[in-house]
Length: 320
Picture (spheres, one colour):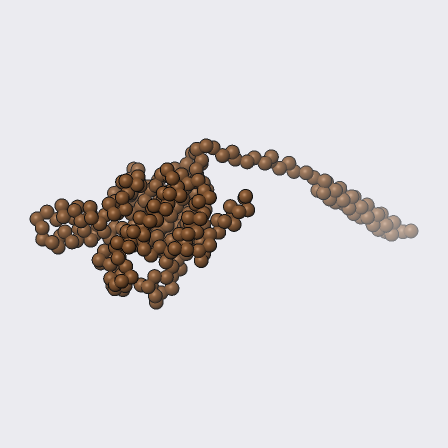
């Protein structure tokens, strides 16, 4: 064998030996990978505290335009829950007819006929509050003034100014004692906290906004298609709002606040009112629930109620 052939033969042997060594190395790595074990953390379940509670969030119901199937589903759900706090996001009254002069002409035309009376409106809202307080005995109750309730003040002030009286503010106050939500809904007697659009509360810089624990509540400051993001951007913290009638949510994270979210639970009124007959709505039925911890932190759940059937039963029945 020539020197050249011998060298080639030795090179082949060396190459085969290197490949055998690589195969052995790979087989060992595969064996090690298959036998590797990673220690997962031990399961740790959060223990509930006696100070934890459930907060119910009721969206726009609009008086006598409340959807009865939605209301029945809501009542059926909260019968099974121990609600300690109720927040109504506003527009509990419809305030149509003579109170709707600041709305669209089409709307005024509809509610000026037999389809609406202020007495029916008040009766429906009182019945709603009666039922909520019956099913949530002793619960703390917060009620935000919506843009529909705010029509009452506009009507009273406008009427007083038009009357030509020397003391329009006194006449406006007298009219408010007749038509004001505080009076027709007996809010003081009920022990319901009422937050008016012209006032600031709890040291917050926005009128008619409150903060309970680590969550803000407001009737609504945007009706944009991306209203949840708009609310979160403007508030800069957790916020629940109504007004849009659309179930929605948006989440973000900031350096200062950490994870924050904005939620709209939808509405509890008719989804296609007569004044929107040529404009199919994107409104959705639902309500909100928050499981609130002792430090004010919370878990928020938007509960859909399509066609009068609550999805919350899918959860509660599976836990029983």
